[in-house]
View 1: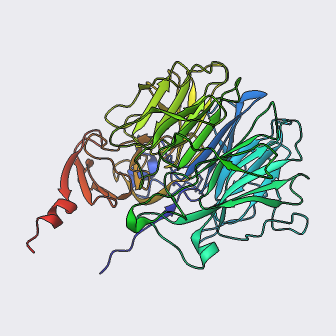
View 2: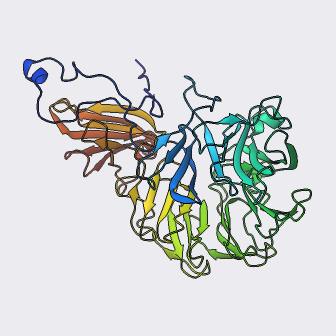
View 3: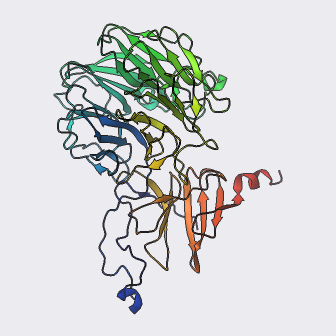
Length: 515
């Protein structure tokens, strides 16, 4: 019989147990279920999902927001220690059970920090909150909000509000190939996408498209000294440009766009760029002519890395490159000390202490992040304006991570925030407070009935990026088997997941079969 795959959407279902103690209760001693007198509660589950943006409120950096394409928007009022979902009014949902809240980007209005804008994945959704995210009002798909012609297949990837005028808002997005061509055009790995930039001058009641092109648009940067000057980054690490040629291995792309007339006309600013997939772009806080870019694509890595300009994009120079993994997914300057900048990718996290000219790697064994956790792609940074060595990272693989020493060490800062896709769960038959799960973000364990989670990913042996199963030996629950659907690996532990041994590698076994 074919095994049925179990998928738990932990954004809403997530975990299961209220029992916390390890001392047998009276129910256990009498032979009945130790959970017989308990009720179901939502505990949150381990970190994971598809994270995207992270923002601090300029007037109070302890107020923070993160977005996740599974779990929507979460907010913290204590500097990232505890997160709570704030999705009231976000009525566009997806998923087979309608419980996925696919929020991608988020921007805080620089003129009024209580006003927050968000954009959704695939659903052409834009929302605005005027009360710090407590309630949301849709700014598309209504008669009052005209001009955005896409109703689906349009992902909003970036939003910018004009300094000094909250009525002027720009949104940058991605149009999936099935939306513009009637069928999905796949490159060597990814959907081949086009892009669009919309602008409103009346707070989102009416929109007009001011640019369309052959790759998605991501970041929109407005020069605070001249709001008619706008920069836009195009491309990202896991999509291909509509003008690429996968068969010939030609990457295509658009690169960096600049307008000096408020978006009426655009010019490509690519002199010196060796790769046109610009996943991240950030403006120097005191010199708007200086910008830093994170560049590269998983399929087209050549020429990726970190690039720097000091003349408003007229010329770029590559300042950070790595031989085997040249794609950077996020860059940012520290607002309080712009001599400090950060850059990160799946296998790289680096700091610059001279404004981006030279870089120091913080990566250990080709990974960054806390022990036992595969953090994935750092999709967005937020540096604390009070401390340039305190940096938060929202991960494309889900989870929020914090370093307080410039990226040398990391902790998970995801309490209450999760969008994890879980594929399996196992409970210690001798102590139901001990729970193991596996899923898209890898394996995790809880020793207190799901209140807190620790990563148990066998990173040194080969990380579990797409976890499949986790099974406990009923006679010895510290004996665990763990599998990876992504690589076909099986691991074994005899000490509850502290140490692992790779026991099967189906890819190697398949290669060894006779022809």
